[in-house]
Image (cartoon, one colour):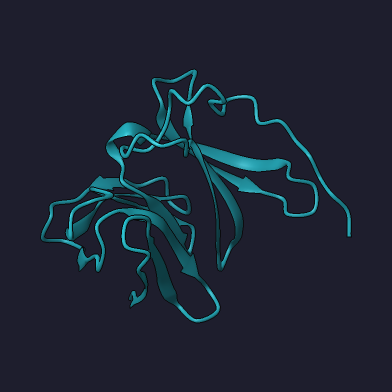
Length: 153
């Protein structure tokens, strides 16, 4: 086992391009059926989200996609089957997926609150990740310490 260190050029190390909750999260790793992903706000392009397919052995970017949604307007995100799902809020109990980007087709879509709603059990969504092995979405709440799983179709 070896340690790999890479510098991502467009990732904002200055904390300008961060998620809506304003913490220090500017970058997310995600894993799905297609592999390892890096999602971040591009400091050179008004903090729009970039989705990068990453080689897990080298951390090299294999391919990347620029989206038209600003990371500052996103509560959190996850990847499933090569599709980015971005949530509307980090703090709303009644939350929803507000945006999707399909890396397979290049199609992106802004969604209404009635399209893919879900209820968060806590107050502040600090982690949202998909597990391709069991098909569940994992949630962690910063404020109350809630942990939860959601089935997704």
